[in-house]
Length: 269
Image 1 (cartoon, helix red, strand yellow):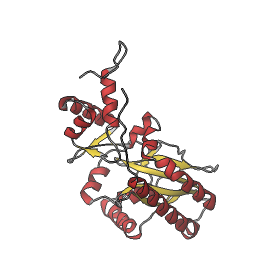
Image 2 (cartoon, rainbow, N blue to C red):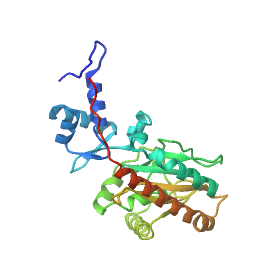
Image 3 (cartoon, helix red, strand yellow):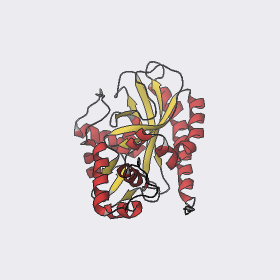
Image 4 (tube, rainbow, N blue to C red):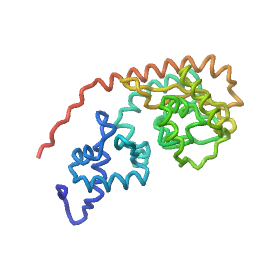
């Protein structure tokens, strides 16, 4: 059916595509084709074509269970972060962590075999790589990626890492499968990850997972420093305990956010 309020310049196909994107909500982050069609008010063939287009463009991922948005939706603006309340929840915690460590701190989420930065508080220091909201790096050689990859089941991990990176960066560390699995087992066992110039020279960081109210890992938070300025001992003995405390506080706030009732108010015609 045509969308309401159409005019001579109204592009109905664009409107339908945006309705499919906005149909995904915190209560339904993953949906089947039928659920997407119902939520967006579209016929199933139309919804299917839109989902396939969005998947090809990298805004939607598909697996055997259904469809879900990817962090690439950030490319359309900051609506992705704000709709999840992620920046509002994390900002004061990141600011306190930066004040206590004197280092830049970031939050990133997995997008295929990459991580994408979705929140960041930076300090004016020279580092080898520029990072801002929307920056993507290969996940495996980063501390933010390791804590999220370590939470995946083996078959899902293989599928994720089989996807080509869209970062345009070739990391220094490219392990064989046995070395990779051993590293992620260690991360899983201790609950945090370290990367020491594995992504690029001079980049050293430690990260912890962020969880939602169900305990599912949804992102990672890190403290990033320059290897020439901050030794590993300082990173682990001083910064890591503060990071783990911050990750717990942010996760607890995410859990409380999940518990807040979401009320849909009908539009007034």
